[in-house]
Image 1: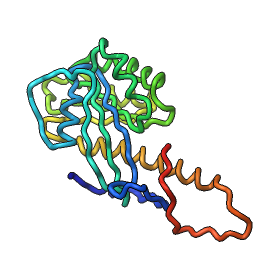
Image 2: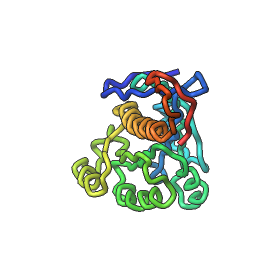
Image 3: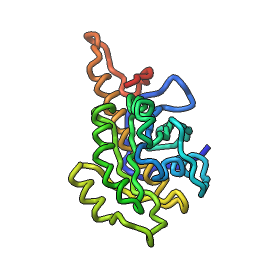
Image 4: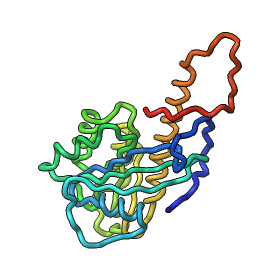
Length: 220
């Protein structure tokens, strides 16, 4: 099991999942054109491995990794989707229920970057309204073949209200950081929702509320 801890601001709450293995389960979906390196990012993050040979994903694949984020045990279920149009009906079904979507393009492929708005439209159409989305420029190790400048990606991110990060599955640059960033934001959203549900729960007159009392699992 791989674990690392965020040093970001702690979010506190009184909550415990009935499954003692983890406090929260987050569904992460990787999308983007075929060949941008989604499978390589998945393997690098989940098992710390990299394969240079390209094998196109058929349908979907997934891996599990458990992290410690802000004193919570968070299990990430990470789905790698096929980028080819012929798998459209299969892959878009996995957008539903996703807490995080990592939209990946290849910094050496201008077309994969041009297709980002099309992928975003699919997120809007099939994903939840509060899904956390991160725009990821992969293959940053191939700087000599770069055709998509980081400045252009940042401009697009600003226009579309997306955060942008460049990664390299080959040398592991920013891979853990990207997954941790999007998972942390999604975790905070889940925590906020759980708190809102608790605040709406009726309390009997004269009943004392124990702020340290643990509640049962709430799936949102």
